[in-house]
Image (cartoon, rainbow, N blue to C red; front, side, top):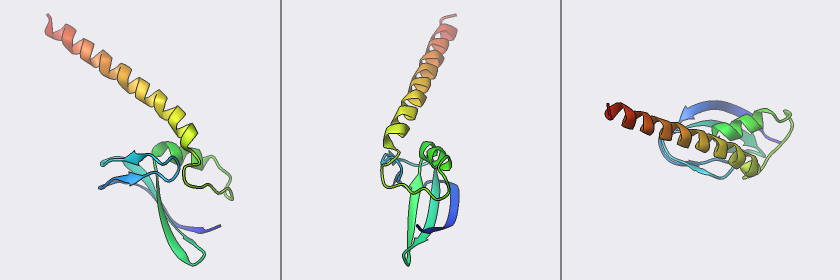
Length: 101
């Protein structure tokens, strides 16, 4: 098990793949950037906000590998996408009704 040297949320400036779910994120998304030392090497990973939340609920000594959170992250993101679609549809209908007056 490695030792974490840095862990902070950043606004990415180039595309990154989330280590937890394997999805690609485009700028200007916010992701958790972590740097850790493991077996004499420095490693760096990025986690999306959903995977960062999943990881925060693990015990301090639990480890996870690439893509281990994919199923749970996809379940949660479908809910977010549905909310965003409903909100966008509502806003579009509101604009149409406001313009029709």
